[in-house]
Length: 246
Image (cartoon, rainbow, N blue to C red; front, top):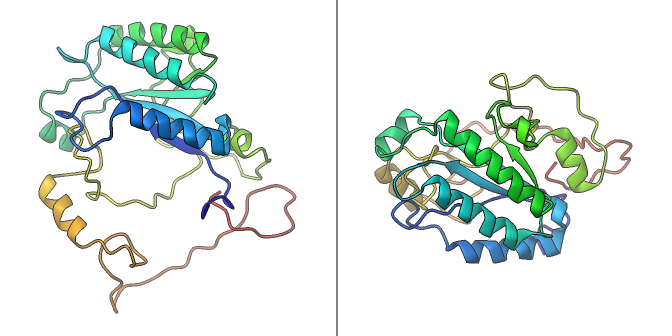
């Protein structure tokens, strides 16, 4: 109820990985039910599935991913219009924390893309990629961006007055570029995590978390510099200011 006054657009990540990869992530079926709850409350345009990162090994084979993706989309049919996929990026911290991970080959990406597109079409769900180039476009997969101006306009059913932006990293046209999170603060413990450097640092930061503090980790100190960001509505022809996320 506290956030009902905000315009909202959610990305919800669900993967097929077990506890040895994602130690503290809730079971798949629990997250699917939470997804459906949000969809019923906000609308299917306002919640999108993220199936990422995708990696391949002896347990999580191409067949396993295809089976898992189909299970999820069959479950979410009618509850969302989009599903976003991306393949694992092996940053140095990822290699260190998940040494058994390897990049997905082009042949594997093409096989998954072809099958995922079929599953999406069957469930009337558009499959999109996140910064993966255009190699899967031939299967009907959308590579235009996962949180573009058009996506958000459709989700909140309002026009946005936003200048055209340059692509970040040459590919990403997503609008949001201010993250309210913080590195080394997630306790899910996923081996592939792009944000956590090591468990020790995460534990230290979590001990400093105070839910009553205005910042995520610790308290504001006397010598901290607080810069208040100017917030303006991007909604076209809006005459009255409202509290909003976008």
